[in-house]
Amino acid sequence: MLLDVEESQLVLVDYQQRLMPAIHEGEAVLANAVRLARIAKLLQVPIWGTEENPDGLGDTVEALQPHVAGRVIAKMAFDGTEDLLPRLKPAPKAQGGNARSLPKHLQKAAPQAAPGRESLVLAGCEAHVCLLQTALGLLEQELEVWVVTDACGSRSERNRDAAFDRLAGAGAELVTTEMVAFEWLRDAEHPRFKEVLTLLK
Image (cartoon, rainbow, N blue to C red; front, side, top):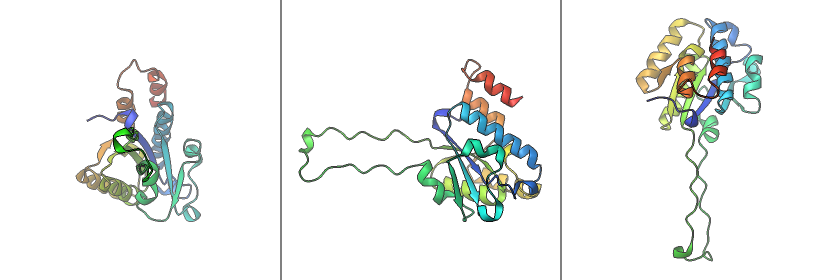
């Protein structure tokens, strides 16, 4: 199973100003998150951000702010599912009608909502806390979860790797930034191929 760009949304979890300096290999993690966000923007993939306790951990880092502007969700729970879900998977609209409506045989079928983008590409910090709990929460909602390992981090390598082991066991797909980019593109004739390739180099 490959990622489908038309079915994807990108969720960037808690890349915050006071947290990132403590993240193991934080510069590389953030560089991949920025690369991922730029590619998503080029390919018109919706991007969301979360901030855990922003009063304590600060805002989203400057490098990511342009990509998530107006789409950042502040939260206090480590699992961001409850806050994210209404935006990622809007509830279906109730069908209208009342007792004075036309008889059923004269009514036109109500238009069905277009299928949502239910492949969620997640990256963030800390991998073993907010990212893990959010990914598990989204999996419980029967959404596809793809975790971009080279754009995730924790304060220690051991915690990060334990999160990846647990996520894989729970059914999340573990991928890298380049895997996501090339699966979204699918072939070298994609009109954005050269621009994406430049971002990956």
